[in-house]
Image 1 (cartoon, one colour):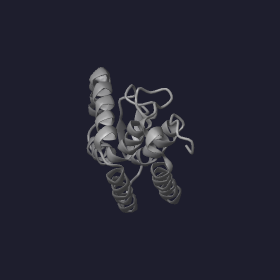
Image 2 (cartoon, rainbow, N blue to C red):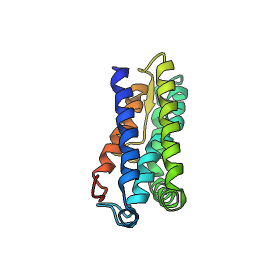
Image 3 (tube, rainbow, N blue to C red):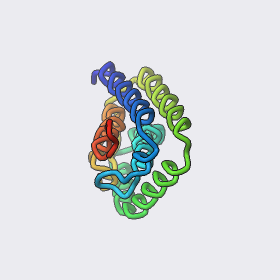
Image 4 (cartoon, helix red, strand yellow):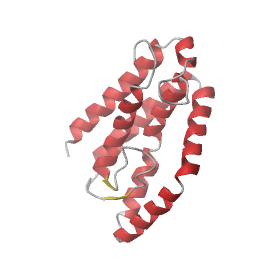
Length: 170
């Protein structure tokens, strides 16, 4: 895997996130996004959330990669069975964060989180380790994802949802 390309993707997403927050008007942020039940502001937080959850996703993959594959496959099946509660928590978390978290805090969280991802990626020894993931939770989750796949996940998630923003400059 080309880690330089992943670093570049992370930086592009970080710069784009800052630009979207800086250029959006209050009215645009309060407006509905396209294809979701969130406002643009809530969707922007959801886009950030894709980066924020990476710490947990990477830890799960590292842990389950040490176990026989059957454990991870079973865990993914249990998570798939809990898709409905996950969807509710995902929606409400993004609604709450996007409604109440100040834009400046979102900006800072973005910088800190992506900086941590850069440092962590540079320390990775084996990006081929991985685990099974719940494919019903997100269209970008594959049945089996390596650490390398996971590092690419938040930018794919970000780019997908960026197309749903109804901002003038999105």
